[in-house]
Image (cartoon, rainbow, N blue to C red; front, side, top):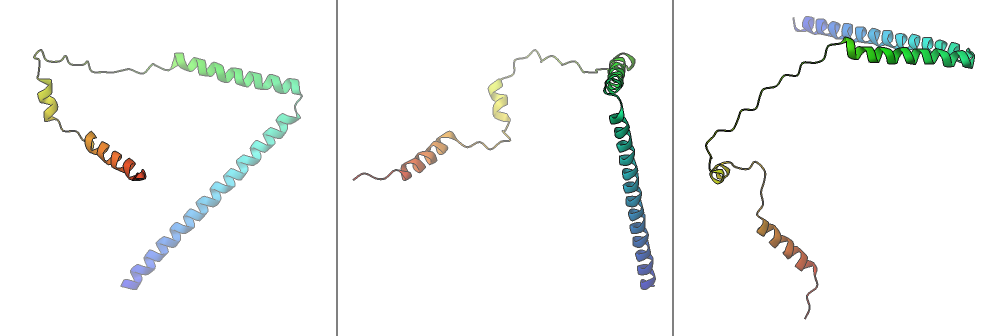
Length: 130
C-alpha cells in the first residue's frame, strides 16, 4: 500500500516537472519568435528613405500623443470621497493631564544620563596631567 502511494506521488511529480519544462520551452520559443519579428521590422524600418522614416515616426508619435490627450476627456474623473473632520469638543480639556496619561511608544533616554556617559567617554580619552 505504501509503495503504491509512493509510485503515484512520483508520477505526479514527474508529470508536474514535464508540464513545467514544456511550459518553459513554449515560453522560450515564443520569445525567440517575437524577437525575430522585431528584428525583421527593425530591418525594414532601417531600409526606408530617411525622409519617409522621419515622417512615419512623426505620425506614430503624433497619433500616440493625441490618444494620450483624448484619454483625459473620454475617461471619467475619479470620484474623491472624504469624510468631514469632526469639530473639537467645546470643553477645554486639561492638556497636561492628557499628556501624562499617554505613554510614549519610543525609547526615551534621559538627557542627563546621556550627557554623563558622553562626558565620561570624552574625559577617559584625554591624558591625565600630573
